[in-house]
Length: 377
Ligand code: AMP
Image (cartoon, rainbow, N blue to C red; front, side, top):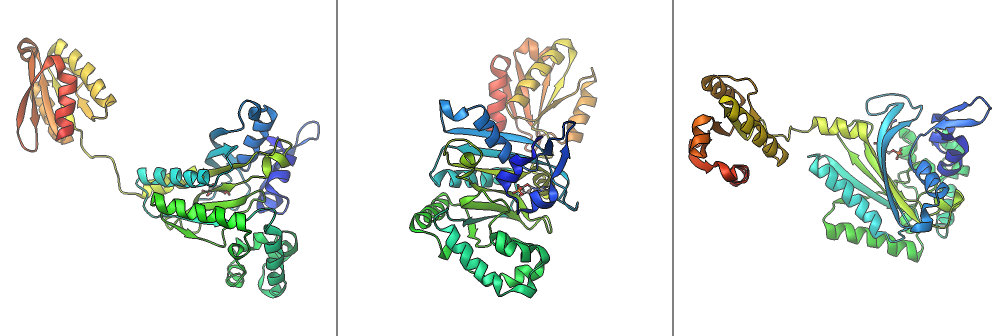
């Protein structure tokens, strides 16, 4: 919970979030409090309140937790949803924006999500945005009839918001709207060129999206969204950008900042749609005989699991035959038997169930040797 004014001041009065979606209540003393609709404002509030900039203005934060917006619930859109937020304070260079986009794309890549695309845009700065705002307001003046009720109101107070209205007639009317990229000042243009060149050199695919303004007022320069075709109408998995003015607006020093939010519910949804990445069968089944065999099998299996080898064993004192049946059922790639004979011998046999090849492994170095043999395979 935060005081309501924090969100009104940081997110902006003319935004959907503040106008329609916040869960706001008076507390027992009549102070207005709000369940946070996003995390950035709270993180900035904490950064200022605890004077974190005093030790070092450059700080990185993350948070994972629930957010609350009174939106119309549908697939991928909930009134309580979860976000992973990452914020970097004190770095003015656009390279850190690129790094955030790279982190997001790498995360999605590692999760095996393929149907995603980075969209990037620049929102300019206080020097060039007002001029663009006027150009856009002039364009909107001509459009009267085709805009929805909200956009007719936004037209004057916050014309940029009309660009990301989802109402189809508004979207159509905005096809030929002037682009902010034609209105950037020299500094912002160079900055955005650096973003695109750096994404290119990192091999991150992206599209330049002049409509991408996002709903929040405090964004400056780089803005980005990761979109997917896998979620129907709710295409944004993550979004973020630079908000250089916000720390100062909320009473802190003039510190630049940038960050992103991932929608965790949406991320879970698209990850769930991907083909299973996990292997279907264990790397190794250890058949253990006798008390000492069980004890050793237990110790070693835990080590192998810890090192990333999926290892299974039977925890009951079953016969060798029934343990081998189980290994078969699990379709284990390798099987090893450890019992009194092996302990006496000081060695066990590791059998590749696919090729039927067997290797003898000394018990002394068994944890490393088995891992190496299986990983080389
Ligand atoms: P935003 O703060 O609106 O830029 O949202 C950042 C991310 O949070 C979006 O890209 C979505 O993935 C997710 N998100 C936003 N609103 C909702 C919602 N009502 N339900 C589920 N996820 C959401």
